[in-house]
Image 1 (cartoon, rainbow, N blue to C red):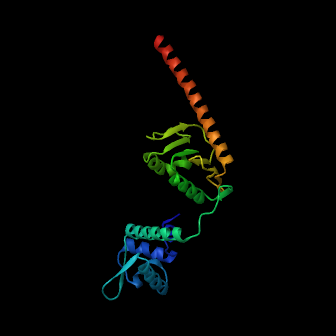
Image 2 (image 1 turned 90 degrees about the vertical axis):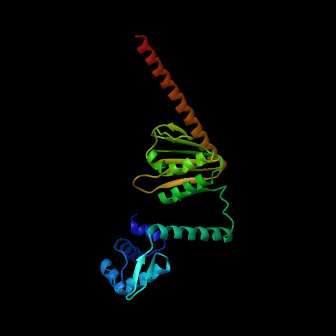
Image 3 (image 1 turned 90 degrees about the horizontal axis):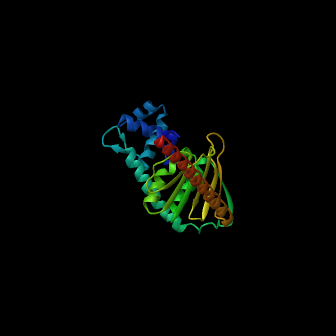
Length: 246
């Protein structure tokens, strides 16, 4: 995603995004100057400038001809987020009740959709979070996991890299490329693959049999990791003692 595409996620069109970026970098401009700077036709530029003003991304300065000034990126984006939060609260209250998904196996496709679902599950967890996967796949969730751990939840991470995560329980084990899994409160599980290239897909469910299967699999793997580490520590201790005795 580039900056223009990012701004489009915040409700601007492509042309509005381009003009907004030029206003931020070049300072106040007339419609003519903005059209010249962006290569967008004058009629489309004036339409876009009016829309930017309506959407809170720009304002006009007194004088003739009219000059348009950008609202700072931070202010514009924060205002949009607050507006969306208010809209979210309204819609959550007005929309029909939640879909019953306890008896369903649901396939979630696309990396962004998978990450959104995992983010929601982590934020919604009340007691325990177990996450497993290669580090590059779970890294985007680390700050959120730290926050949940600081809030008193049990957070267990199984990944292929040794990590110093105060408050969290971590295990190091080889992970399959692209594989990722998450279980929260022994109630919901999501597991599947987010490859570097190619389609990403995960299975999500709250069905007890799948949740129990995934939970038992993680429990057995953790026991194996602990046994293996215990054996390695014992071997290292023995070698150290032999060296000292020699």
